[in-house]
Amino acid sequence: MTVISKPHTSLELFPHGGWDVHHHIFEPAKFAYAPDRHLTPPPATVQQFLEFKKNIGITNSVLTHGLSYGSDCTSLKSFVDELGKTDTKAIGVIDPDTVTPEELREMQSKGVRGIRVNLYKYQAMHDVELQKKALREHARAIGKHCPGWSMAFTHVHPEFWADLIPVIEHEIVPSGVCLVTDHFALLRTASMLSSECEGDVTRQTGFREIMELVRAGHLYVKLSAPYRVSHEAPYYADLKPLVRALFNANRHQILWGSDWPHTPHMKVRSREEALCETPCLIIDDLEWLKSLRSWLTAEEWHAMMVSNPQRLYGW
Image 1 (tube, helix red, strand yellow):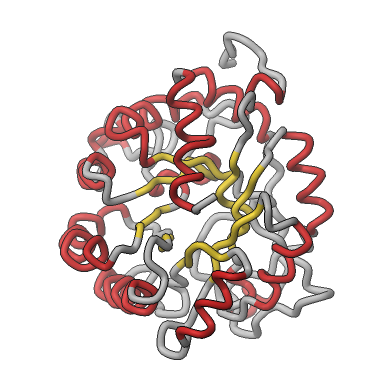
Image 2 (cartoon, rainbow, N blue to C red):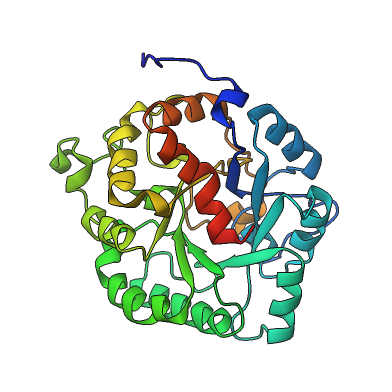
């Protein structure tokens, strides 16, 4: 069993506040899910998140539009109003082929400060060329009208990063869009690594490319959903080498998100699977936060929890 050196209360964890930059709200009774969704999560209401937020000690959050709602952000804007615009920003989903400048300005007025790319819509989860297409089209749609907005995406193939770097460096970065990837860029820890890596996180495919992008300031990485890259719940001790590598590369590019209510692992589901309600995971977020805090200096923690999200999301 992993031993945590010192327990932390919520006040000790967040003496200057804490920003959760990746959580969802699902209220299908009020807002119906998209018929072509890839996942049917159970309800996770505004009130339930507010209780979670209070229990953990979070002061600010970035509501991330659930892909189960497709590109219709009506629910997102309503949820932000309920959560309170003064301490909540949002990440939306758009259809880059049809979104108008007026719609983007209206999203901005509602607290939206970025978008996420729905790779399922592009059937791009396992196709790097389609991923390039999706990134280009989304960056083109927002770059001219929403300078400084972020663009987040998650994919399950770290080996794609080598092919994505030229697009990121020569097209996405010059567009003024801030690129973000979720869930540790899905780099794996020792408990999930294949045998050829011999437990060394630095030897896995994609590690070098991701660190190069972070070091150059071209990519933000969310330390979110540790259960997607480690089997060692609740402390996730084998994440320490990966966390330290990211901070050593560039502490100004690291963010923290809960991924509440902890939807299951990403995968391409059949039509029948997608339409059946899939339960969320049960995660001890406070124990994970205590573990993460023990690996960082006070300056690193403040950067991740306060100053980086303030800068990126324009508080």
